Image 1 (cartoon, rainbow, N blue to C red):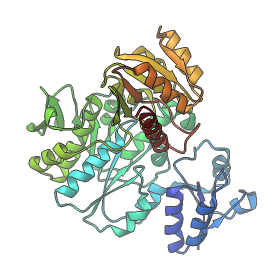
Image 2 (tube, rainbow, N blue to C red; image 1 turned 60 degrees about the vertical axis):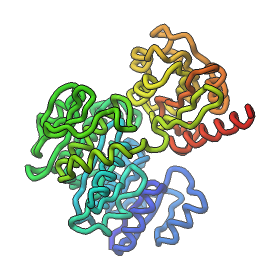
Image 3 (cartoon, rainbow, N blue to C red; image 1 turned 90 degrees about the horizontal axis):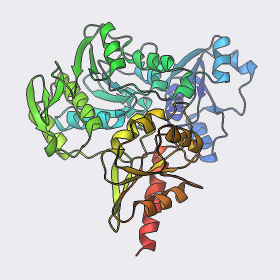
Image 4 (cartoon, helix red, strand yellow; image 1 turned 180 degrees about the vertical axis):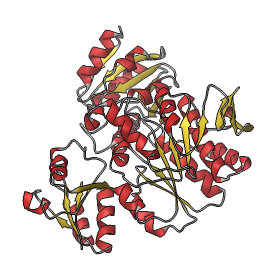
Length: 442
């Protein structure tokens, strides 16, 4: 029997604890924040021991610590665990150790959820047994043992999850893009890039790498891989998927035109090209891929049209947690009043205001990053700014500034942890405020 610590009391931590207890391990759970009674009871129910503190005596008895994605490896307690020679692992690594199926993993700064969902849809509609898991919401440990050798798990893998991998080896690994993000947790851009690169670390010549040829960092990474490489591009013809004259091609053959699908914008074109390349490798036919694309709708909180009050459109893009994700959304709508701000990831906002689309009329600043946003806006001469007292006030200001026929866009370019549990809760609050405003206006 091994002594295993689960560091982090979230969904992935609970899934890992359940699996480890089933395998006969003694499992302890610690979180930097106090667990809710409901979550405390969940861990107790599966047989894990919840700790109030992480004492040296216990650390000395641990064999492994499974670190949840929300816990930085720069955390002082994690450093202490390493100093005491406790093996550091993660939930993706743990799930993989009990997995006999075919792993398809997708990473990147932006677009992971859309791409994973699209790949999974294409595979399932083509008759494959496929499950989407990982950072998308379902922990890998929930499904790893339940899948057979011919079954597929399409994994959304974040930099945090990849950082704790050692033997994880997806049969197909896809890299969408890399822009500055999560620098506060990784310590440097170099560390962030190195975490992303780990998705390819254990691949061999029998595996596949699918990489965005339009991203300089990604293209550089593609030069030093052991796996079979396929590139995709919105700019030029490649050996994978590419976009030409408004038509998506795969392996040189036309699949579907942009006009026939619901996913709009250049960023979604890259997501589609990645999904096409992955599914082409898996053997999905052109007809099956085209049919899925024609019926596919964007995931919640990603450029999701919520509704209108009069002629003012409200759009929930809460999932845009960095500048690179927010900019395409801003460029996709007319007369935009955009809500920016949230918790700080130490990434800066110069890129945002340097490339701010001309159709952005007003920026409403909210959250912990208000002042940093203001300084970047001032640096690049953008003056149409409002400071909001809170999130509700931000939505109200954006609405009044967007009248009579503009767009209220929640595309914060920031994480949500200053006021919300996650981007989904922020998006749901945005929708709730919209409904209340609509009711007020009759």
